[in-house]
Length: 369
Image (cartoon, rainbow, N blue to C red; front, side, top):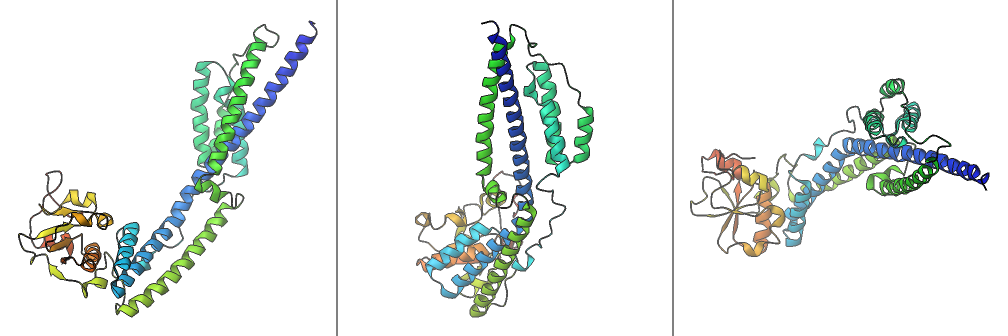
């Protein structure tokens, strides 16, 4: 009977050693995946973010041009919604080129991966049970993770030279406490492996993770292909916009809010000519309103006008935004609904330039944001 105990403990030692290896290997894989996804998301934002924004702007301009041509309420509503998605108008010719400044690599090079794997296996905090040693290792591994995320091979080499293995506090082989410790360790490792596997699946199922898995070996090439597709779509949108503008007699979109598409068809007045007792509707966003607005004006952001139209009085409404583009869209919609609405040309900039009073949400000096 006594001869069986060393065999059992020996088997347990092997199982723990195998679990240690599996855990460390999976830990490295999950951290590598996390770094790759983070870097991929960063480069994706740098490279494709401006192109997506440019497409949103072109879609908004197309919707506005169509609304200006047809005057149909549903087209005006689509224009309002498209502008809300795109934000402040811009010239579609100003879509940034596909040349982000020095993007980080998505995948660290092989030598960085090797160094990181070696350091993680030697210095991981969970390789010791001593609290002070765990803390020291945690600090060190944080530096390792930071260097790996940056793809800094030189820093990883310095960290590898710096590391020295501390004495382990696990019970010595052959000691009475060793078997109980091995069972606890195996239970811990099994649970840790399960959590890491779940995290790996979660990362792979994120939007960036799914996109990265389309070309895990050549992520930069995938980004280039996506950029080419977006540029082709932008070219198609430009052609459609030019056709619509030609049909409406508008020769080209201005920068800022481009009220020229609507001005010829809408009731319009200057800021100076707005009556002192007029009912004003401000359709800017909350931060713009807080910076400076007309005292007593109604405030409904452009994206909420359709849903809150019943809140508007039946009186003539003088509609304001920053420079007159968003307000023109709202006036177009309100007129189509049979409301008496007038666009204030030049918006709050013109109101301020005319010397008309404003207040701020904070009580301080009011200004147009």
